[in-house]
Amino acid sequence: MHKISGTYLGQGTACPLFQMDDCERVTLTGRMPNMEPGEKLELEGNWMHCSTCMQGGRTFKVSKYRRANEMPVYSGAGENSFWPSLSGLSL
Image 1 (cartoon, rainbow, N blue to C red):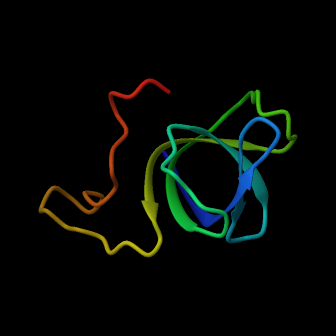
Image 2: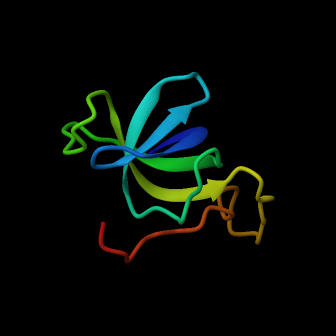
Image 3: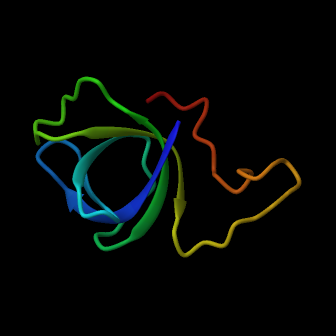
């Protein structure tokens, strides 16, 4: 699993566009929250080896997300307990 953070840019040709904090633009796949362009997000998931997004560049498959303005909630379940899980959803 990898974590990336950055800004949602809006819908691309086939997939959402995301600009990471290091200014690299990537496409996203997986189950995503309702997002508004300009929204800051922290994402957890994996880099795809092949992409169907038709944008070129890399594609990140999101398995967990957190809006950057949300405060972490620690429930004693470990350091990553604040990440909403998308397990059980078809991706």
